[in-house]
Image (cartoon, rainbow, N blue to C red; front, side, top):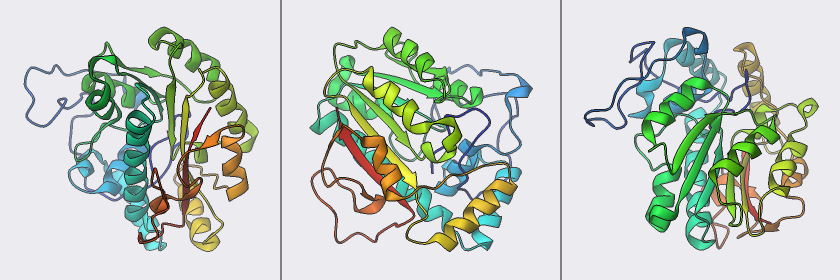
Length: 302
């Protein structure tokens, strides 16, 4: 699962190793890159358990190098509870790659608002590299995350001009829209990426209204990409995941199919509609894929 864009909240999925890098600096943009300065951030920005580090650890090498011991403890407890956190994280990452590629290639969208992006990946592509491949200098990406450490990493990773990162909270959609207006050409469509993020928001914080506020402000032919944890297919397993996560201070709010589908109210489904993550492809449902029934994913168009 990807990390949360909600301040003080996170999605737990990980395994890992020990602390690999200094507590007050960022690694280089890519392994082996030269001339990339180290950025510092306040010690108060660090969390004992970080969803971004947990997620990277779940994906294995080389992402696991971002995990700290506290993140690994959460993973070990999830694994001991029979929660397939590695498979869940990898299924979500694969869906994200298919869905973002669909938005920028098949739908022709050159501008992407990626909310809760997690830490930059080492082993797979990121949002702005996918957008650049298909739209070159016309592409623009805004990474939005409530964790300032995550944002600092993206500011090192992206170019800072066409591709930016800002500290923004999904529960404050008007602030996100203000940054979107400053960064994007809102005469053109925008793809909004919310993979493994909405499950971090309690109903009391009105996640459906937050998403609707953002989508209503975007131009026609904009896209919404969502993946979301569900308890419908294996409630006991998901209940164990929620319990372990809550104990670690990482609340999760799994939802049923109808609740997740409500995020797409008023949108036109792209491809096969809302499906278990591993089955969703831009043009069809992949009947040959091993279903990952713990989360749904889909893409909708305004």
